[in-house]
Amino acid sequence: YCKSLGITVVPEIDVPAHAMSFTKVWPELSVENEFRGHTLIDHFNLSMPESVAKIKEIFDDYTKDTDEVPATFDGETTVHVGADEYYLSGTIYREYFNDIVPYIKQTNPVRIWGSLTQMNDNNQTKIIPEAIENVQMNIWNTGWANPQDMFDLGFDLTHAGLDGIAHLDDVLDALHVLLGKLGDVDEAVDVAVQVHESTEGSDLGHGTGNEVAHLEAAVDGFPRVGLKLLD
Image 1: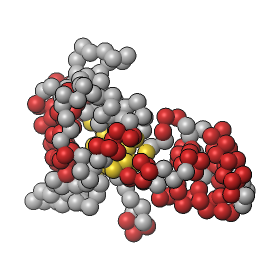
Image 2 (image 1 turned 180 degrees about the vertical axis):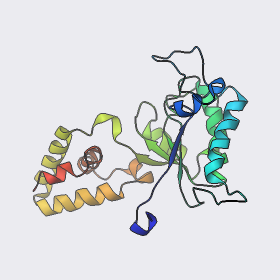
Image 3 (image 1 turned 180 degrees about the horizontal axis):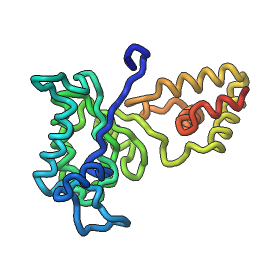
């Protein structure tokens, strides 16, 4: 139904962190007695092969056909595998990244939250090409994933409201700059809408003008608020 309306739905199963719904069911697979500003009981313990196997099993339930029913997520559906804010170990995280991304790519295109800058083990564990090629990465925090570094590695980048810049004062400042430069309200709105609806993937690494890009990120946080100020 969504496809018929031109809407793309990207389902997300957020693991190995933010996974309390799973670790409550399988507590033996969770991280125990670890604290990084908060307890990590919502983390799968990736040092355990059983945890990784369970995560794959969860994804298989949605991405693979059975004799009785087809897969919930068909092969054209991009599947978001989560993978943000995992605090246990950079090396373990990178090994998991190199495992889970190619695994899901066997059935579906993959999107993932950017975390490789933060989850660094001094580059001892390199991210393999199979875990990079045609993989979409959400840039949600530049401390967790440096956009330029991720672009240079080869990821297709999307963004999800960079580092809290999406505030009303940012919308107003960006609109003021645009209107001053373009001098025409209709043209400013057209440019803002076009950038908002088209800026995706590798385009993030190539800038479309600081003022317009700033507005586009701001409007993402407050959908169409800035434009309604022109009414």
